[in-house]
Length: 605
Image (tube, rainbow, N blue to C red; front, top):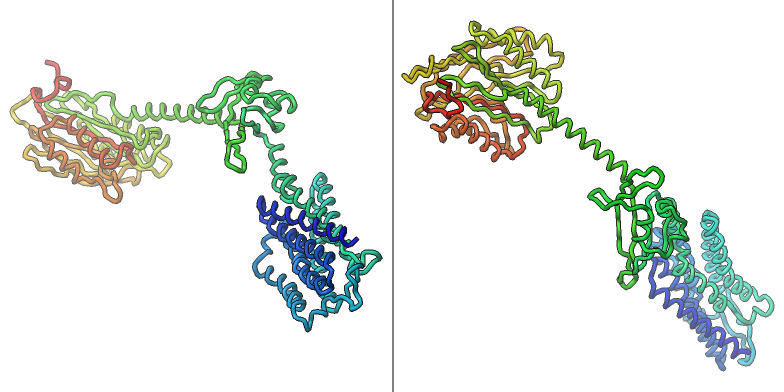
């Protein structure tokens, strides 16, 4: 009888040791370590208990009985830590908690190890014989160990039960199985220690733990019952609106979610085993374009666009075991992007049309003068700016020129720009000075402009020599600056001067301060007018400035007006970048007799 019981305990210890080794090898979760410790403790209990039962000498029995307590006192703390981790309270498992839980077991083992206190825990009766199963006598320290272990076991089991009640119904049934399996060894240990009937002579706790350990290991690693994440993940995948397909290494469908079945118009059973490509054919694949996979809706016949996300699935060794295919419908996003692009294109066309109206399509041909202009909108040109320029005839002997900048951007700025340009055209007259004309324009803008927009500009009259005079008579210019940058005049000897007297911007005050200034150009001289988009262009903290413009004019004196305009524009692009931060308007007037001008700017004879 003793031999059979010893064999059962030894077998239980071996089985539990194997389970512990399996848990340590898998290491699937952090709680696997606490389970491994628990199984090792019970395995040690079973093996040492088997030796205790089979020993022929009472002293040997006593020694191995003492050794089994290393497993007994470790079991309850390990189960408590395991339940904390299982119920989502793993943050409570700190080094301090583990140290506190270890204090009573260490004290118990110390009491057993000291001969003077040994019998306070357990002892064999003096009349014990090796041929029977003697009842081990227990001391007061044993009941302290018993109480400590059972307090931990009860606390852990209550916590386990409370957490289990909150689980989903399908999961709850499996948790009940685990709970009952955990109660089995506890019941066996209680029957033994309370000396109930035959259980008083034999402790079947290690043997009962075979069932508990096996179920816990199975639940933890095979069915993932200890980890709630797969259950939650499954629920999420099943409810996803994205189509999810799992393909094996041969491209066959091994699982689909309801959204994928709906997309294919087939049941899940009809799709399992089919090739992924066949599934897409069934769904009505139209094309694979830059926007994604396009499928035709079987009901409406309209195209539906899907983002395709294909990820490899690997096994524990890192080898590719299959693929995860996720199709996310982006039809609405693609349609919105298409409509947005159409709106942006329309806006760009409107902006280009409006901005084209802010500059003359072709500059007029003036006697003895060569003209050139440049207009560059800010950014990509998609937003309407406020810069404008114009050159028009006042009579047969005089021409007017204007270059201005309305504050702000957009349609409202374009409205003020158009009002300023065409009001100036309507009011300009050869008998009125530029300053007088601008005062009239200011009155009109103040009446028409409700917003706080203002307009800076330079406006002037230009009177070249009569006919194609080559005798050196000057080009006479009268100009007024309404809050605008000073124009630059390049003389034939290379000097560059600022001309004009600064006045008040238009549409700000009822009586702006405006001054006329007289300028004469000799043959070869150049007048350069520009908006602040040129001189205020930045590179870091550095501005392009009027000084750079003057140096460019000086360096390239003798060049045609068109060449000078191109040089200045290229320099500011290189300084700031291809896309300017502000609109730029540039007008160059060069005094050049007919024989010193391009053919396109010579007056017909």
